[in-house]
Amino acid sequence: MIVRRYSAISGALRPFLLCTVLVTAFIVPRSALADTDLTIGSTAVVAYANGDNVRLRSDFSYEAETIGFVAESSTVTTIDGPFEAADGSL
Image (cartoon, rainbow, N blue to C red):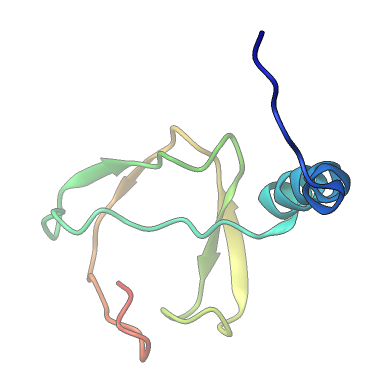
């Protein structure tokens, strides 16, 4: 016979911790990152957006104005970039 001992605290915390992890996984926004191996003038396909539209901005920062949306799997032409943000992301 195997006897397992669980403390009252860990037994009570387990559902709370599980719920916290699940809620965090759904609430925390996920950033989409661009591939950096593109060449200027080449075509690319919008991917890894989880079926969401991708914002087309007037500049390369999150604060820039959104001027349109591009659907996932759309083909686009690379005209410039990649650009590096102040936080080091491309």
